[in-house]
Amino acid sequence: MEKIRNMSNYRRNRVPGGTYFFTVNLLERRKQILVDHIDALRTAIRKTRRKAPFHIDAWVILPDHMHCIWTLPEGDAKYSDRWRAIKKYFTKSIPDSEYRSEVRIKRNERGIWQRRFWEHTIRDDLDYKRHMDYIHFNPVKHGLVKSVKDWPHSTFHRLVERGIYLPEWGEDVSLNVGERA
Image 1 (cartoon, rainbow, N blue to C red):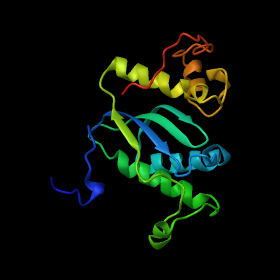
Image 2: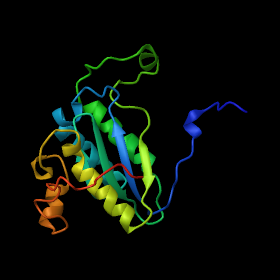
Image 3: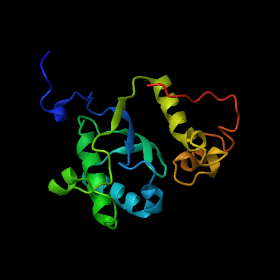
């Protein structure tokens, strides 16, 4: 079997104008940089969207990771470029205080983000609904709040205003919001 020489060439599914679910993690999962610097993260997202637009279907920002669903413009599948820009803008806007390995120092990299991210192409309406629910239930799943409506860093509140979710959604303990991709 041939060895893989360059892991940066691994395959991603790219559907121009597609809808995607993402998970993006901090390198040090015990940190809470994302919520501590929520305004910097929001600014990084806005700057990126000005240069390379995309629609935010859903987003939740937790202390050490985030989940979101984006729909890209027709004919566009460059989500990796957008993630690179968000990470770069955010990293440049916060103080340099994290631990950096020798490899990261040699590459002149900060130690904020895991290098890669998880991506899943949304296949159909049921897949979309399951991922939307997963995103919004995630703060409860991680024990950060008892009710979905109590987590401030989520599109849940906007979606309640638009009538997509009821304010009490997710309070039913029988709700099955598991990890399905």
